[in-house]
Length: 282
Ligand SMILES: Nc1nc2c(ncn2[C@@H]2O[C@H](COP(=O)(O)OP(=O)(O)OP(=O)(O)O)[C@@H](O)[C@H]2O)c(=O)[nH]1
Ligand SMILES: [Mg+2]
Image 1 (cartoon, protein in one colour):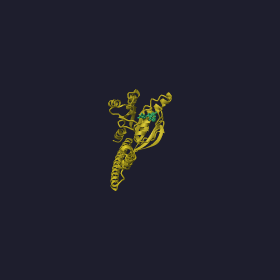
Image 2: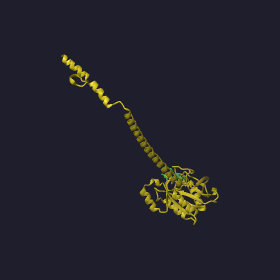
Image 3: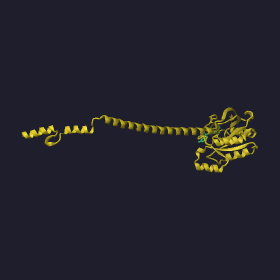
């Protein structure tokens, strides 16, 4: 017994538990020491070296990221400017415009001392919208209810110092007014269109969704009955945003000399400017 006690005491001293099993507490402590040695100066230097390396790497990564972001932003900005310029071009920024007066008939019209462009077409086809989109200013009244424009509206325009007038006319084929008013309108309009020799371009606006209307065919025939050599008809289809690609392609094939625009999408106005410039000044 004494011998055993002696042996136990020696084991305890040597860090072992009962029956030669190493003392767990001490073992744990010593393992911890091995796994997590006290940082030596070298360790600290090495550790701080690694951290600095990591920091540099992070910084580089961040710089690359922010450069990429900058590039993306620059590209976005470029595209935005490009789109803005395209829109500006479509709007023809060179046109200055002001409202001159409204007249119910030719008797009240301003003196015919400038070349004029008349906007003709069915009610609701987009005559007033066309004027606004073309000049880039909301100057003519628009309405989803047909018959908005009831008078002959004169606008004075100027492009690069050259003055001309735009005449926004009431639409034809508007059924909601009484027959007598309609007859008076058409009498006034007929007189105006026949006698107003200062009109150099009759812009005939037609709805791209209904290209074969009898009323549009009749208008063209009617205009041709009094058209002078220095007067032209320019057919423009509106609302092309309502057509799909193949419908638009078919329409273009059928009307090769016409122009095609969308007032809502502001499309087709470059061609409009080019054509008007050619017809009005050359
Ligand atoms: N989707 C589409 N809608 C259009 C376009 N042009 C005009 N509109 C719409 O058509 C409606 C009639 O437009 P207006 O410009 O007032 O037509 P208007 O020919 O002057 O009509 P009246 O003055 O009644 O003869 C409005 O609701 C416009 O927003 C176009 O190109 N696309
Ligand atoms: Mg109108």
